[in-house]
Image 1 (tube, rainbow, N blue to C red):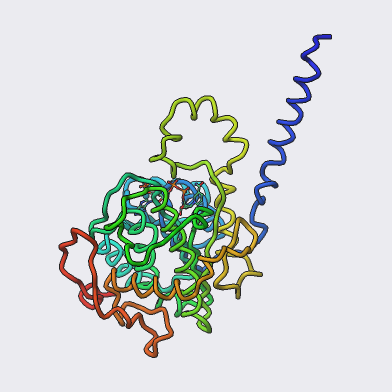
Image 2: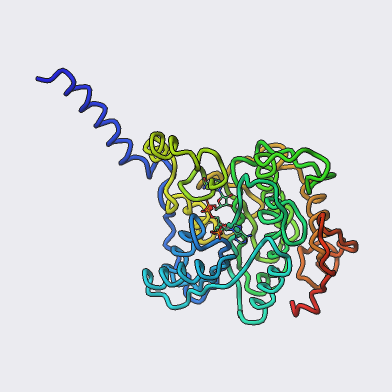
Amino acid sequence: MNRYLLPASLVGSVVGGFVLLKDSMHGGLCSSKAVLQGKTAIVTGANTGLGKETALDLARRGARVILACRDEAACEDAAREIRGETLNPRVVARRLDLASLESVRDFAAHINQDEENVHILVNNAAVMRCPHSTTADGFEMQFGVNHLGHFLLTNLLLDKLRASAPSRVVTVSSLAQVAACLDLSDLNWERRKYDPKLAYCDSKLANVLFSLELSKRLQGTGVTANSVNPGVCNTSLGRHTGMHKSAFSSSVLGPFFWLVVRSPRLGAQPSINLAVSEELRDVSGRYFDGMRQVDPGTKANDEELARQLWEASARLVCLRDHDGSGGGSGKGGAGEASECHKGQGAGAPERSAVEDGA
Ligand SMILES: NC(=O)c1ccc[n+]([C@@H]2O[C@H](COP(=O)([O-])OP(=O)(O)OC[C@H]3O[C@@H](n4cnc5c(N)ncnc54)[C@H](OP(=O)(O)O)[C@@H]3O)[C@@H](O)[C@H]2O)c1
């Protein structure tokens, strides 16, 4: 017998077993059988990756699903694919560029005008470790898209979410949040040397803190807010990283990565779980690592930091009392946003929600 045969078959069995176990090791599929007929869900960044898989699952459950993406053609392609796969005709594509506050306001105005209800909002879209660039309003791109865009979007949809209660806001964060520093005095990276990795971590900590403060402001309204780390997944998120670009890592290391990273379908399960699971109906202000509720760490639990970030964000996006509200200020508004600070290089005139019809 060939002396390599036994070790080779052993290695083959271990790898084969690992492949079979891979799905369950990564948390498996969301076990909820919830049906979403009559419900409306919005998923940002739904043309690809985890967002597309989340939208597909919600559509399969019968929801009206609004794919909110910056690239209209890619968005329509994804919506068509999901309609075809689920035979659910209530899947639509809408333009939303989170790197433009005007686009966020336009999108929210259309939703508030056209949609009777919004029961599920999944704040999923993100950019990771991109070279330094700024949004249309002059904010550092990762903070601007991953946090500020979703902060404004959620606030503009709050009245609709409250009126549709029970409803849920799911914000997709990352384990990267534990490495964040989040300098409130320099949110826009104007005083420090730009660090794309740290900027991503900061934006993901901002996601958790936003969700924490939002849940406090929404107490008693029937709207829950939770954040989640989906785990490492095989998507295009790493498009700006050296690893993604290197031929060596994609060809030689690729198969090993495949063994340890989740497929987009598996990576979407934690968001789906938070959006639909019956047993999580009243759970709010929590952080999930995959399917498990965990302690997010000291910074992410800092309620004072969360409050200060909320106030700073409200000023940066020029949030107004009548923009919907996070509650907790009498009129239930983001009334603390009396001043409005634009990001560096921003020249756009301040707009009001009344002008925008929000
Ligand atoms: N993949 C992972 O390993 C991992 C790990 C931890 C956390 N996460 C989190 O999971 C979420 C989903 O990421 P993913 O892995 O699915 O990444 P992805 O495949 O790169 O998808 C990101 C989505 O965000 C969209 N997006 C980017 N900038 C936008 C903007 N300005 N306006 C609107 N949409 C914008 C992208 O649109 P385009 O296609 O047009 O670029 C895309 O649809 C993110 O919040 C990410 O931080 C992912």
